[in-house]
Length: 418
Ligand SMILES: Cc1cc2nc3c(=O)[nH]c(=O)nc-3n(C[C@H](O)[C@H](O)[C@H](O)COP(=O)(O)O)c2cc1C
Image (tube, rainbow, N blue to C red):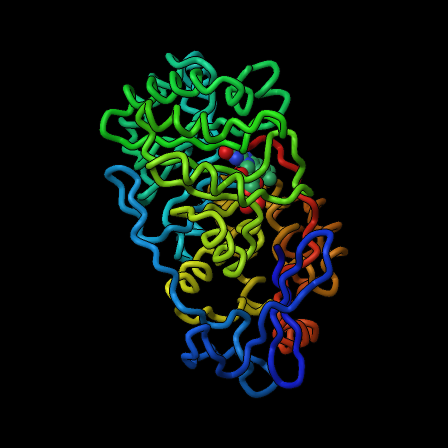
């Protein structure tokens, strides 16, 4: 579900966009509007560079009655989690998400347990983990219980807050050759053995499992796999509401997610297509999940966790950052990657993030084409300055109409995930 905002007769209309269906306006926001209980609710003013304040993008709604999200011994301040995303959720990206706030728990990219144990070299994906702020979750993948058990022991030594196991990766390389990821969902007992071994290695550190609805639509094993994980000692499960065979074009199945929620006693974190506060509230309401997890939308809007957390508490959601602020964030992100990885490697790594920032605005296509060839830091800065100068007129236009600036994202292929 996408959220689109239009100006209409002095108020903002919020539309929910459902793939394959006409847009429909579920409600309209007014400077003040009524809750279902008839209560008058305030609306956050939006900064407008050119005129009077306009209402905020997301109207205030009554808070959802959610308790703190308890994952075994770990209490999360927010039930909104940041997903593991291979190729993206590195130390620098995680630092940016943390700065915006609202994220209860953030994960590393998935780490190969066997690769670490057999090779005996700390994976690049664990760079910075020892010193990083907490809470922090590390995700492991493998098919051998002995590997995840030993990797879990090493993660305990690194002082991580939580260890997650990947049972959702749909990639051939992981499912086929390695017999891991979503392949393991074909046999719930093998998931149980993996979780049991990880719990043994993890000691008092909580263990969770991330999965899909099943390997395919004729094998929807998530309830059985979640039960096996629970019996083996997992403190929660995350479920992406699609099967391993589904593309992102297939709609998330809320009923199947709810079925998992009703099957286990541990918290279920629901995942899939959450791109803003309305989608998150919809996910909670339709599945009864205890938490939600966001992946792709966070790559272009790392402040999404803050927005969702505020909306869940019934507090006003601030307007999206102006383009000038997004430009500053893009440059900050690039600067940190170059500091961490050197140049030109930091710039090369930044290209994929840059393509997602500043998208959906005039000139974004041209910007993406140019930035994806940026050779080094100097080149990168020159492209940003040329195509998104801080004082460009479109900056004012794009923010003055109050529309969210992130639309028409470049397609993001799942390089390796769940
Ligand atoms: C590029 C990419 C990489 C991913 N890497 C991982 C991963 O390492 N581990 C994992 O469990 N899921 C991974 N995923 C899946 C996401 O965590 C998430 O389950 C999925 O994208 C649905 O959430 P979304 O609709 O909010 O994007 C990846 C997804 C993408 C697009």
